[in-house]
Length: 237
Ligand SMILES: O=c1ccn([C@@H]2O[C@H](COP(=O)(O)O)[C@@H](O)[C@H]2O)c(=O)[nH]1
Image 1 (cartoon, rainbow, N blue to C red):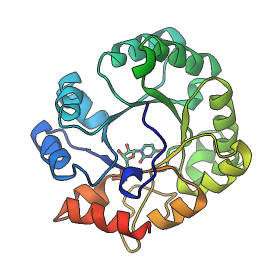
Image 2: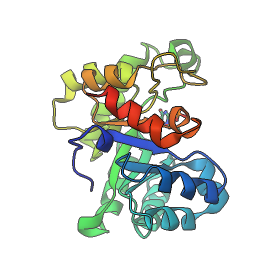
Image 3: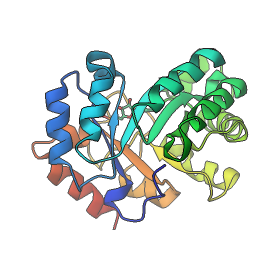
Image 4: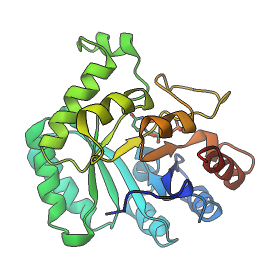
């Protein structure tokens, strides 16, 4: 499992959201040494399969496999066992899958021994605003729901929590310093938010208590992705 990051660059996780493995590997090469981890998400994994993880891991950076597993406990445990063989450093499940599912994911990860992936629980997607969440039948707003899901996830064996930067401070208050917080929904000042609704700047997220910052388009869509990552790291002081 990766250690908690101690330098600004180590805090950055770049999301390689592309269906093209050649582009993903080119980005991973260009960003070597500029970020702490590289994230393989659904777009790349569905297009290219497990070899995407293997080829990107071979370039040196630890891989965050962001599959957001959400199914019955037996099925999720099987998927985690299959993912163990890929050597990812982090793997996501949806906290809304419930206590038994999260616990099954953690137990299945432990079968990989010391090199097991961190099991991260995704709380409320950063693309959802309060009204979107209410439309799914959840009352109380994102902060309340993230706190509820995060507590459940940690009690059920999750190694870390994925949340928007808006919930980082309340989560730190509720969970203390020991729980790693992995935070997408990051936008440098003036950057296009796109489909993200609960966002903050990298410096704001860090000041609130985030451990890792997950950043895709502001880096991968830049003319010079390495320079964009360096500028973000510099903004973290
Ligand atoms: O709640 C979540 C969970 C995961 N993500 C992932 O993070 C990146 C963010 O990419 P940007 O281009 O910086 O918006 C993306 O891969 C998502 O799948 C998230 O955004 N929100």
